[in-house]
Image (cartoon, rainbow, N blue to C red):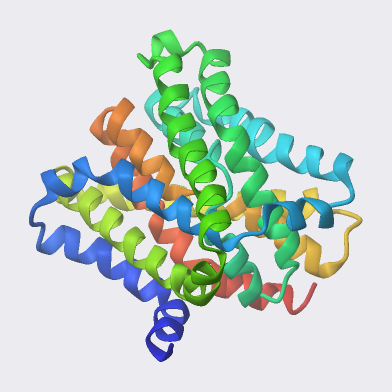
Length: 301
């Protein structure tokens, strides 16, 4: 258990190591890239196994508030940012749309716990947005005229449905068959997911190493731009939680800002050009480094 706690405490170090190793020592990246989809499905399976879906949904009594949060996070914010960025770069706007349309990350309940927020609400946001993503993500690309981008929305829906609903269904079956065994080992699921994210980041970064190292100035500008986007997401999440108590606003903010980057990387690898994949991988920088400043800011709010 000491190893589990160590991995969870220093998850950002592990994920940053995945980025740096991918850039400096990429091996078997083609094989690993082909495994991105099953790896993400395993991650979601572990999250669903660890989560009591019925209990979480019962704890979320304010259905109107949850509907508002969900609509803002995975529909309104992606469209607003796409419209704001599109006049400057259609490619960048497409990447931001994909990134911000993702559901809340599988690790957001753990991040919420670190910042002393409402874990039940955070779990509910992650579960509900994940279940809606197969429908909302293709819809968003239809709304922005996906034909000019070159995406098959039906194929994307199929991929997302498989990614989300197969692990969800499997988790419920497994918990019914071997509940005691799952209860004994579920403490280590978060640590396993962190290691799986490390593999995904390493593979994605390594696969695009030439493109990234070939234009470092452009990459630096993209990283800076992503920090602006993520700061905006923090602010938008905090404002969306207006009227809630402090712990709930923390949960809402984290749900808005810490998207499922792993899912974005998988979709980018399957459906988009390499530049979009690079942007999804680069989003790991603000994802992994902004939690500490956010926690410090919340001490004064």
